Each structure stands twice: as C-alpha cells, then as structure tokens.
Amino acid sequence: MTISEIENEIIEEFSMFDDWMEKYEHLIELGKDLPIIDDSQKTDENIIKGCQSRVWLHADNENGVIAYSADSDAIITKGIIALLVRVMNNQDPKEIVEAKLGFIDEIGLKEHLSPTRSNGLVSMVKQMKIYALLMQQAS
Image 1: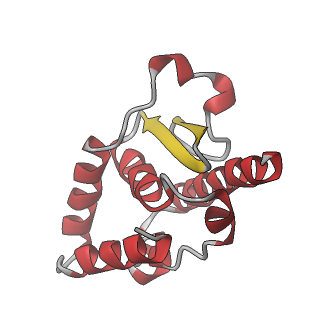
Image 2: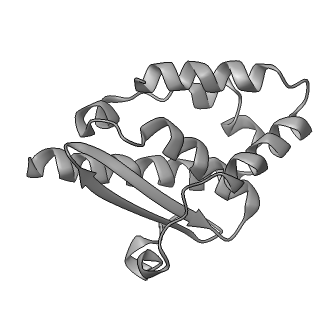
Image 3: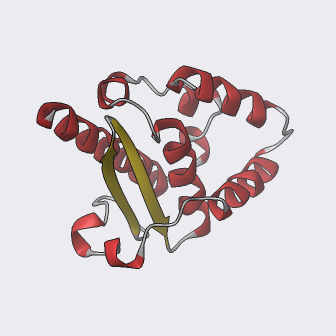
C-alpha cells in the first residue's frame, strides 16, 4: 500500500468514532500492536529528542525500503508512534521524505494533544523523515 492509501485507511478508521475518548482508546489499542523495538536498540541515540515521554525509534534499510521499529514508555505516545510507523513502514525513503502526512490534521490528532505531546508528534515525524533522508542519500 502507498502512504496515501494507508493515510486514507486511518482517516476512515478514526471517522467511525464519535468522540475523542474513543479515539484515544483506539490509539492505545494501536500502540499494543506496534512492532516493538529490540531491547538492544533502546539506546540513548535512538531516543527521539523533543518528546516528553521516552520514545525509541530505529530504522533499517531493507531492500530499498525503510523498516521502522519503535517503543514508548507512555501509552498514548506509543499509539502515536504506532500510527506513524504504520504509515511510513516499508516505504521508499523518497516517498517518506515527500509525504505530507495530511491524515494527522484530518483526524484532528494535533489539536487534541497537549502542547508537549503535539511537539513530540512533530519530533517523531521529523526523526522518521531524517532517517529516510539519510537512507535516500546513502543509496
């Protein structure tokens, strides 16, 4: 699936919920399905700077696409990184770098997060795109 197809799938999923409490519950459930980062990758260099809670993100180049793994010590944040991994995992680095990620605004995620979580979301996206940019330049 392309990034935009996955984004549309997420928008459709979130539109089924009536209020933000249900959407938060869904985020928490998504966090439980996150492909967990290997404990050996839970290093200081893999911690995303700018997040209030601890978020580890690792990226590997697997046959020209990026495979992300992540974890967080906070359940909502874990759901947020799970959403981002779902959208950008196993995608071409160029596609990740160019992705607009409009689903974030479309589902109202940023406006329903505290300012510190919202900053963390921006930091997560930025780090994922940095990994993609580095891998794009390396190939």
